Amino acid sequence: MTIIILSIIGASLVGAFSARFLLRGNHISLGFAGGAILGLVFLEIIPELFEEALSLNVEAHILSIAVLLGFLVMHVLEKASGLHEHAHSDGHIHTGKTMAVGTLSLHAFIDGLGLGAAYFVSNSLGIAVLAAFVLHKFLDGMNIQAIAQASVSKNRRFFLVINIGMTLLAVFLVSLFWLSASFLLFLAALVAGVLLYVSSVHVLPEAHEHENSWKTILATVCGVVIVFLLSQFHV
Image 1 (cartoon, rainbow, N blue to C red):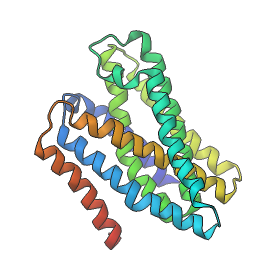
Image 2: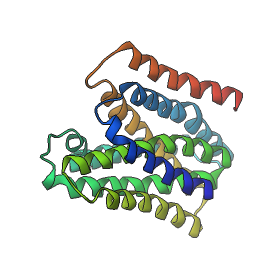
Image 3: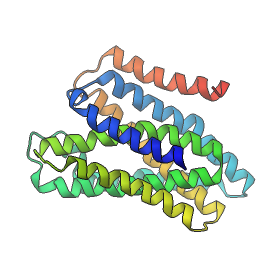
Image 4: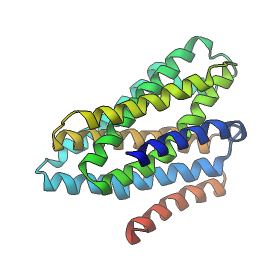
């Protein structure tokens, strides 16, 4: 539990405080992060989910539905709040700021549920999900910083605390209540869909938004390859 807490807090803080240097577009690092998250989802998290499903006699299509549901939930939340547009606006964010931050907070709560559930299903699944979340929370920190800067807000630290707090609250809630192994597996699969959405719809398009260079593409491939090697040799 201590590792989870420190990872969530650390990644969020580093993302927020480094955002001022990265907001103008460190496309290579975004490309690498997107590739790494994709690799973790397809090479580590989903295989672990289906292995656990087999041992628990959970039907595979239930997990597939959960992954799809996680993807669709994020799509609806982002489009309803206009979060992606807000993060790239030129200062016209005042009216949507609260909704955007609220959506990030709800997203963070869903993240925490899945992260806590993954650790209760198995340590190996928990580690795979945590690795993806370190990258994911770093990007969340950058998003919050971007929203605050675009609105010339002095509440960026407050927004960040809310985001971190919602994730930790969800992790603690999962640890407090007894939940069946099959339901925990469903929650973990749900967050696999969230991570898939974040990488494929948000991070990678943003990495290539202003510069479609071979360096960025190579960074994405490197992110996938490194995860593949780690999954093979269990480094």
